[in-house]
Amino acid sequence: MVSFEEFINIKFDFKDIDEKNPVVGNRDIFWLYHEVVKILFNALNIKSLLEVGPWDGGVFRTICGCKYKPQIYTMVDSWGEQFLGVVTKDYSHIDKIALDLKYPYELDKITGDSTIILPKFIEEGRKYELVLIDGGHKPSVTSSDLFCGWRLVADKGLMVVDDVHSRYLHEMYKETMIFYLQHYKEAFLIKDVYYPKHPGCFIFMKNP
Ligand SMILES: C[S@@+](CC[C@H](N)C(=O)[O-])C[C@H]1O[C@@H](n2cnc3c(N)ncnc32)[C@H](O)[C@@H]1O
Image (cartoon, rainbow, N blue to C red; front, top):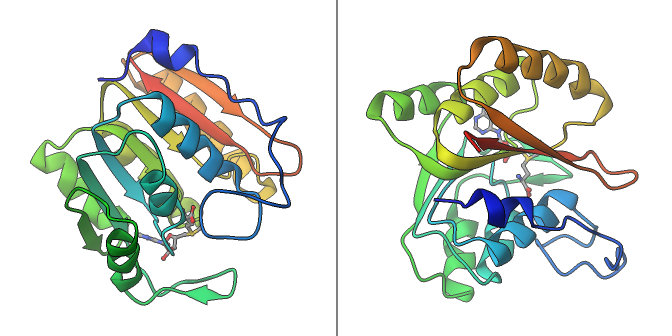
């Protein structure tokens, strides 16, 4: 489990970041979400991860270079969506990254719509120490991912949500936060990770 003390002491400080020479993911741009993932997996021994929307494997590639790697790593993506001019048809590129970077554990790669897959995971009683949400950005998909994702977080686990400050998602995220506060019994702590000009992330901790 993630320790509250370890988590709360992590510094999300990007002042030394060289945006022109990013060292994470596989893009030639600074990507705040990947930096956050890198900081978390270098600081915390997170053993199980659910990643919604791995796309071309930027998060996976980042984790491959980190101190700690999850032994249980589930990825869910419908694939086929064009994003930044790249279409990922299936997860063959993920297998290639795993091979090239010698990922030491098996990967659980699931192809499908997260709004259907995540409720099944809840029924199965799955729990993860970390859930990453960056899949479909349509409000119906994002809200389902947020609610289902949160139910899949283990006690004292974390959920990281990307793009929370992007203009078109902001209102919906605000509504979701209010819903959480009103309807969920579990306490949660939110860290807001922001960097100028980037659509920041929220990190939630369950029952801190
Ligand atoms: C913004 S990209 C993800 C970027 C990636 N997280 C990264 O950091 O490099 C969105 C991804 O979500 C996937 N996606 C979109 N709608 C989805 C859905 N309903 N279920 C599962 N995956 C979905 C797309 O195929 C795409 O790979």
